[in-house]
Image 1 (cartoon, helix red, strand yellow):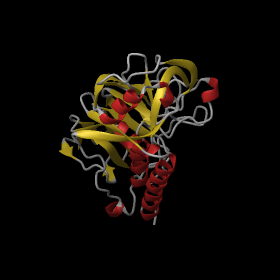
Image 2: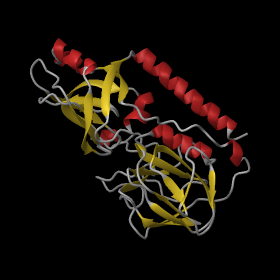
Image 3: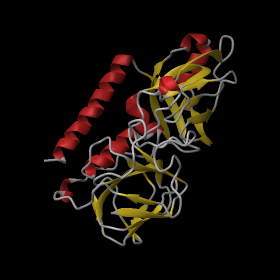
Image 4: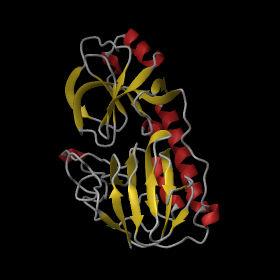
Length: 313
């Protein structure tokens, strides 16, 4: 029971919800950059939300199925096809033995997630199957997928309620994406006009964008002195601003500490937007309170719980 990688695509890795509890030792959390899309894919495929999936960036892989299994594809629309025929996203589908899944080109978004019923037969490292590329840790030998790789399933089969495992695609292209943020922790290190610039101007996503961080281009954000601080912890979504004044949003494979000022942090509920940005996309920032961020996240998690309940009845 397995899949064989005929073509790995641009960057395809095994990811789950991350390696929690090891940042004090310098080990990043890693995990899916768009955890909501990964969770939805798992729910549709009949798995627990935390199960490992394949995260595919821009150009997806070409996979041959050595046995039949139920899958679901969510996140960015990279135009999935099965034996040359278009297949729907955000829906449980059954792939027969011998069929080939591949992706034509990115249509919307940046990252797609493929969940397989039963999950991937990948060993856990420090409690997670997530791949940390820079540390060559977890996933499949700590690396991205390569041609000829064979990945087994823990189990495989067809679900009895396939017809109800359908959702409206979540990621909708926009001219300008708004990321909600909580100010700080070093927002006091910026001039008032610097804060105003950050919250009123539009920034462009550059090509300097990987699983570690996303560099933006746009008007410089002015500090009182400069962008250097004594290194401290970095959260997923932290917006660092070096002395040059151009923001960098830190992502799943970020370093555990850093020495640049952080003007704000993207709220967890908006990681689904952040993860799907690509070079050339436009971004604006909107401030929210900690209480609002928590309420938004609770509502998002409640919706996932409801979805999970419906799809397991």
